[in-house]
Length: 169
Image (cartoon, rainbow, N blue to C red; front, side, top):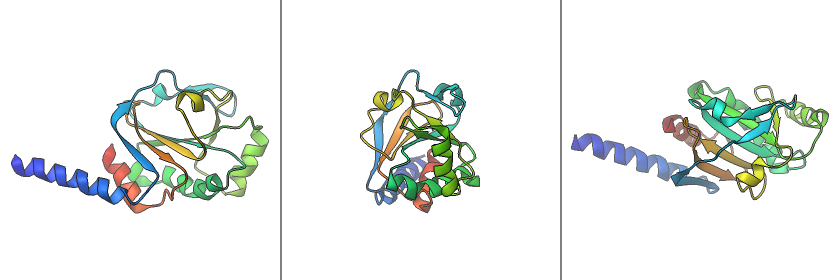
């Protein structure tokens, strides 16, 4: 039993230390809970994050004018299709009051194939989550609680990040 506890402690610390190379990730000790996290799909239908309880949820907030958003979007697209993360649902949420044509053009130019655009219009979700800029990625566990946040862009192809995310669930 002592060995098992020590083993779990070591694995947890190694995973946290390996992830520390990603400077802009914040892992919460106390999980954050929100009510009614609602955003819109491309047909202006409301989506509630509670409908995805049981899945690991990644919400990425972005804008068409944002260069770091443009840089990270292809790796985020590949992450959605990663077979190691089959319980992961990614929502890329545009924070602008953009038209669908402009957003689709942005995604098409980047050859995004695995992600659908969503919208925060009016910008209530960004306010509720206290976003400070884009890109920002918010990670929710299978119970719908925020356990981590990435402020700024990262490479979602990073194997240490993928392994950490896979083991989190």
